[in-house]
Image 1: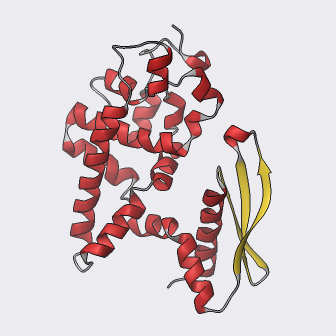
Image 2: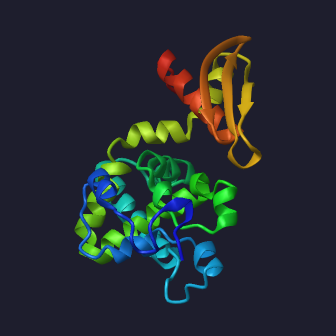
Length: 238
């Protein structure tokens, strides 16, 4: 039973580079095998004794919410519950977590069915978001809450304000344009790639003037990046 994409047999991946990237060395490498196993792979190859990452994802999601909540509670004592909830939501959203997973190349280690692989599953935001939580769950099971916290702090909570601005970039730019009586829209510049792995390039346009350009695997992601760049380059604040 060979690994897809000409990789090793199941359970035989070399995680050395990944461990260097995340700054954590696993005592039990089999936890990573589970963290990177999509249910489509288990189903396709009838690996009844090889669970998918779903339970790890469930655990990681709970740890992520706790660590993020605790950090925000301590860092922003002046913020009321509603603002903390909104800030937490902006940090643990699919867009943010999937981008971290892309930066760490987590999709390169994913065990997928042939169908999921052919349709770009290893770069799908929903799956990459799941992977971040699954790896977090694996770290917790391998070493406990302290190492799990370090992982979250290192890759998610290292720059809270910047990540929050990125998540809210479109609404921030929209509010700014309304305050300044400017017309805002987004213009599609290019669309490339196969249907399962599209790449969009979009420009933010204020009062007919093209501002910054963003790219992404969805129009929404490209617009988000264009808005974020426009905010940063123009020193926009609300």
